[in-house]
Length: 238
Image (cartoon, rainbow, N blue to C red; front, side, top):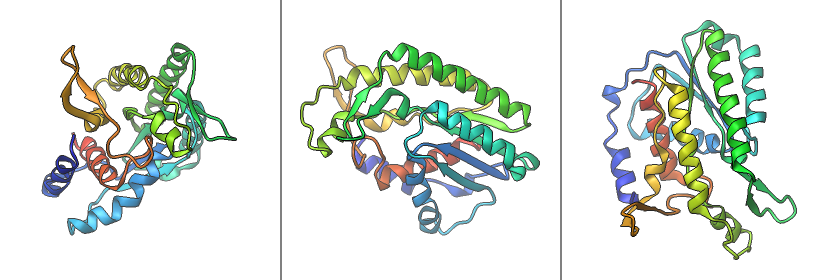
């Protein structure tokens, strides 16, 4: 999706149609969340609007799903407001499950085997859904956005481009299909992958996926952060 299309989506967002039944929407995430939190108030100011729902991003940079799950259970235990009001909790982890970082060089690599990674993530996603319901809170698992570790590595002056990003993002696509099944009837996540599809098609007529609109191959730039924020806001009104 081009930058112009992202901007058009943002400019044509209709807050007059925004009617959210939740008092609070909490989004627990890895570092992605802080990028969306940073554009929340500027976006509302841009549209000269206020909303009755409190949107709050709780970001934990570098955490995988297992550590994110521990933060999630702690959050539910100590947050009385969440328990006593009509609240929704969205769980947005997974990026740090499929990659690992060399602390010395900051190089990203794929976590292998991905099959074991998938099993662990699915178990925890199901637990998030179950526990949320036990607390009387509406749950939702957000899709994992595509990532481009070779772009990140080039930022660290590592230029071998040895990671198969097509294979990695196909795995993420499969995980997102599972997330959709787990969410079932209680939530529909935005499809973040569409923002990275180009108009070009490969020999098998599938659209190419390209690193667009990120700051470093992993984190969304300001425009993409705004679009994702609005998509998440719209998703809790459906």
